Image (cartoon, rainbow, N blue to C red):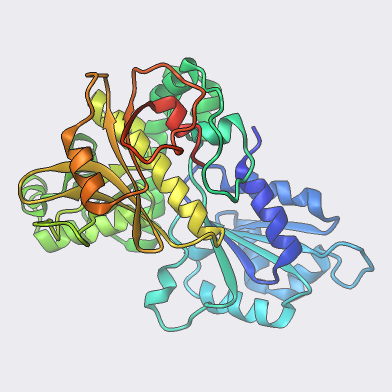
Length: 402
């Protein structure tokens, strides 16, 4: 299936000299997306750090790499090199920095990995100015229907068959299980992916001794998805300190197992300043049906704000709303540090908009306020044309995002 990121790569390589960083979860399709770039040149080289032969080539450097891309030959196309999982190399930042500085404008470099590639910002050497980062997400409704980029942010509604949403809820948005559409395969795939994530990927970088306890934390988070984090309770359940819980959740976030969203507090009376909510990148791990639907919406919104930001369309953020009077709305999307639209998720239609949505829409003066309902049938009407709070079908709403 065609991915929206293929056109991003093509545009980047034609317009920019910076390295292209692609970061995202294990098995989200990064390598396949990168290999599509081979169609853009007759001098293409793919190197994966996890492959022992490729690792030797990387370590030998330009002496080994340049002949493989026929660097000195005449060609109308620029050579493209893909470094996959190179973040597992201890000196990867300096390696890329040196390679880029020598061959800037002469060789296009794509770097992809299953851990967050911007972690070096906390370190010494910086690659700032030498790369543009794009975050790769699982399939979304919009990408499946129409894998093109809309620079106007919000797309027109596109027909989303009920079976498509059901399939995403059952198999998730990762390419293999979604395309296979077989529940037994999906279960096997998730078991293997869980083992590889914790026993290989995380261990290769973090050297966590108590992996079994980290896995226990991950299992508990499946039960607490769409809820506020209680570090003290988690520490008690896993039998480690609160500081360890916080560090481990940072690790799980770094490796795209989960993500947190913070409460929006600007201009909110009696707002809560702490207590992030937790969601999983793979919403199929969430067992509660209502929490799973909310997690699916959270993942779609996160994909949208990441892509809009990565494309340079503005600074977008994902938050939630809650005050000390226990009024809550599931999501707030900000645009350039200003509330843009708010979303409340419902599994079923109760014919009445949540009063909390009305309250926060008025208080924050958001452009849109939407109550998205799972069991409402698709309607071919734009959700983003009315400034008044609306009840809208979940499938219609998701078809208008990225």
